[in-house]
Length: 158
Image (cartoon, rainbow, N blue to C red; front, side, top):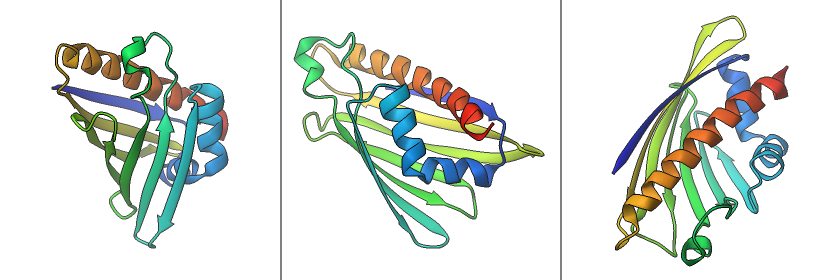
């Protein structure tokens, strides 16, 4: 199991950040155009204080061993608690049910038009002979994706 702790400061307030995350145009521009995902579809259900979120995604297969390429697609199930500015999530991969990615993201105001996104992600892959490799690869890809998304958000809101 690998735990990632990520922190990114961004040039927007927390409310603007969550508006971006929940916006389909922003999501497609980030995931499909920038991160080169082969699939990205998000559905949000706004319940005033909470937003439940379902994301169907498939990251690019670059550098992934052929045996794993068909197993990249996942569904992210998440919940945004607006009052706490906290998003909790976990992924479901029907091809590899022993691949678990879960975590939480908190966004807090740190100044005028500045927020800090802190994210904790737990990666646990039980796959005979490949679990450690897959965990390392997921950790590296997730770290890069979150770094890119912070830079992308700054450009988007700038």
